[in-house]
Image 1 (cartoon, rainbow, N blue to C red):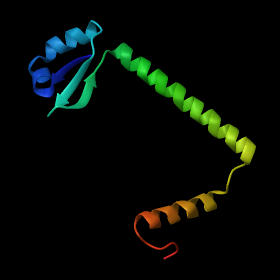
Image 2 (cartoon, rainbow, N blue to C red):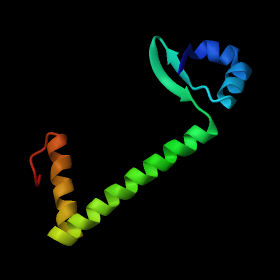
Image 3 (cartoon, one colour):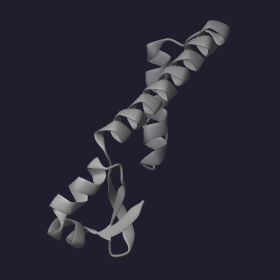
Image 4 (cartoon, rainbow, N blue to C red):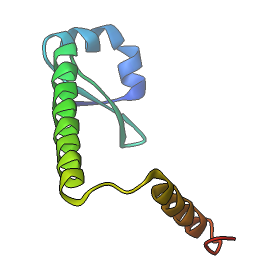
Length: 95
């Protein structure tokens, strides 16, 4: 992966795109911190496929858990979320 500052990438954008088309990957940095990446469309498709597979596996695990343990009613889940929100905001539950 080629590291380049955002300003350098902006100055040489056409060159960066040509290199990306050749299969190179760029990590854009600002103030010595990575802020973005430029990758080929093929790499992006691969990343999205990997993410979709992970999402599908998570969904299958969740469905298996529901089949094993059952589901809770929405009202119970909503009340629990409200309680957690109140705790995060420093309120006592039910106030």
